[in-house]
Amino acid sequence: MDKTIEKIVSLCKRRGFIFQSSDIYGGFSAVYDYGPLGIELKNNISNLWWKEMTQVHENIVGLDSGILMHPKIWEASGHLGAFNDPLVDCKQCKSRYRADEFSENYNSINWEKTKCPNCGSVGSLTEPRQFNLMFKTHVGPVEETGTEAFLRPETAQGIYVNYQLVQGAMRMKVPFGIAQIGKAFRNEIIARNFIFRTREFEQMEMQYFVKPGTDNEAFGQWKDKRLKFYLDNLDINKDKLRFHEHGRNELAHYAKEAWDIEYKFPFGWSEIEGIHNRTDYDLSKHEEFSGKNLSYFDQPNNDRYLPYIIETSAGLNRMLLTVLADAYWEDDKNNRTVMRISPRLAPVKAVICPLLKKDGLPEKAREIVEILKPHFKVLYDQQGSIGKRYYRQDEAGTPFGITVDHQSIEDNTVTLRDRDSMKQDRIPIEKVLNAIQDSF
Ligand code: GAP
Image (cartoon, rainbow, N blue to C red):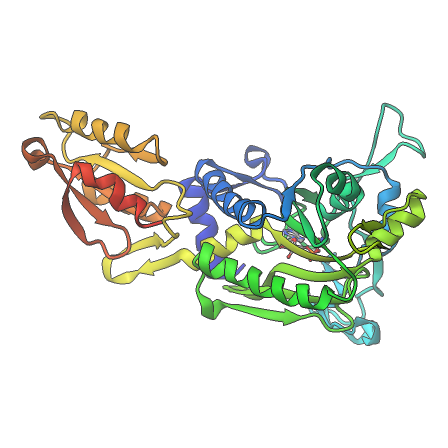
């Protein structure tokens, strides 16, 4: 694993952001648990996305569909037949690879002459075998054919099969969108780079239903809007974001056009979100497999058609990793590690510290906790030297430190410390709330 990622993994464990699943049993590969700070950060990110989609856009509404769905859905969507990764094994050292890691055009590789990247032996790699990524389970007590079900590999299909119900109930007119946040599962051959590629993850997907012929224009608009979200809402460094267009070999079976938003992670440029023109592929397949008419009736124009779908599909966990990687800063000058997370996203907005555990300072500090805690999450800390307390919170990404000292008792002022500059200002207690709120 890359060194910076290793440091982020260790910080995440130390400060309570992210833990390996089933730690006391030696861990469970490619599944992670989110600790107290991790879940706060994850919620802050997903709330921003939800607000951006369903509040800022009046023509987008939300949905929460089941993880388990009718198995025919996966036949119709093509996931049962085509949601495969090409798997290559080394017979010598038992290492396992995705064939497309060797080359996008892996079909033209001569595997007999290819070296195993792990043990170096030549002639030990198998020909690629197709491996379906969906997790299979059984519904009901008996495991037999007819009881098979799948954990959804994308949240999108739950939206497609509910689209007419949502449209009718909410009287939506094309163009309109349906947004959903939820778990998805993929039996990834190789899970690596911490929470970047895992077997259980969360997606934030929005499906935008448009009239055929207007899809290219809508696609361009959503591309721009989604990039802007990373810059304006998550405050991600502009130079570390870029678009990547899918070539012919990369396009998913449902897509006419696809662009990824990529971030420059310590392990290289990698996808965080995909924007896809899925045409009427999914709806026409569901019409075929369900036998139901899924067309939309455009009353004013007396027109009936199957809408095209523009999809924006982001991984919440990857977005969180983007925020963490972008925030990680080794401040060598001051010998500290800082998570420069935007105050808007920070799990805890301020730490409140009495300088001493006596002379009425803890009581005064508690008064400030009471003022701030109805508005956002704060922490009271009286353990250890003030420097240590601040450095702990620098690693946790807490943007503000408030110190209560003897002067606070006399004139109702405190010092407000900025995490990144370490600058301290003395301000009246009554101004603390605004000072913090103004930062996000
Ligand atoms: N509905 C379209 C779809 O699922 P995708 O490109 O396969 O498209 C969309 O996935 C997003 O889901 C990716 O950009 C990524 O952020 C996230 N994602 C996919 N597989 C993942 C995995 N194994 N672990 C974490 N996130 C994943």
